[in-house]
View 1: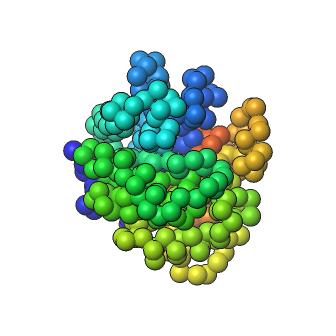
View 2 (view 1 turned 120 degrees about the horizontal axis):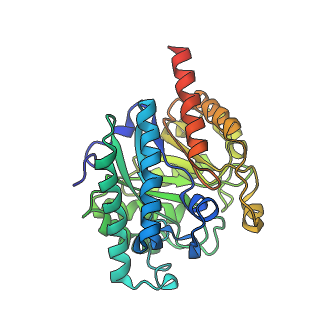
Length: 318
């Protein structure tokens, strides 16, 4: 049963943690194979399922330790129609996998027993490569594509659906329209290059304003993910009103560009303490930012350091 779909608790001023780089953690730190970076394939494997369950629990316990709310992104980033056949899933099997991924987190939510809200976010990824805009879809094509998952999510315990690593506005708008048509609240998380612009070349603020204006119903909020704070901090010094729509950051551990990360053979896990300080600096810079987690190269260490630094700073300011 959905808990917060009609009233999302993360829209307030309380701090929420989310998880870290699930796929890179499972692949590089836990030793699992993830074809096409698809973590949902582990749901059918007992060992993989157990690892995913523990991954979620350890992050939820971290939020509980610091008295923060928690948002977990389900393992459905690659569980969409173009990727399913590449992984041996027909549409029926793909639908079952989406439902199973959410059901697993529902079980973990009950076990974690947080005093603060535990929000289930049904995760959606880009149709193509998250690092490259490639051949752009029309808004209608994007809506048709993302409606597959949106229509599944509405019948589950998911509280919200979040599109991570969006790299162009037509796809973002299409996703938002698909969520609205299905009756799901949604959030859009854009990725940016080292210059703070989307891989399509569009400035971040412009992308947010265009999505808000062109979508049939604006998303609940926006986030940035799969980029290091040094890539976009300068962009956030803008005083325009779009900054108030930015609610969360899931930063990469590495300062490398997307092109460099694509070529890397080893995981760059950066510096957790430094990343924590950079996230706290972002929180001070943009007052609307209340959701913090990690993306590629991060794991529990990074989110723990971020939680500790934000908690320390809040206590110091009290």
